[in-house]
Length: 65
Image (cartoon, rainbow, N blue to C red; front, side):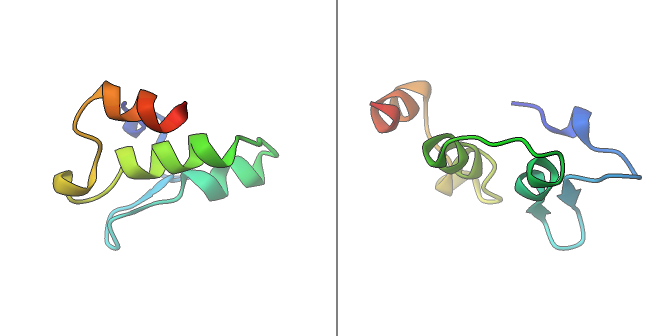
């Protein structure tokens, strides 16, 4: 997943000095709603430490079922 392509100076979705993603705030500001499960998956996929991310697509699919 490459959310960097959505990042821009005027409306950043990644705060580099704090190493946090602001994608949820971006969606809220634009009145976009997603499920709690999808939100959880995205947050885990974007974890700063690789060891905290999903290891493979199978883990994601198992969580979503």
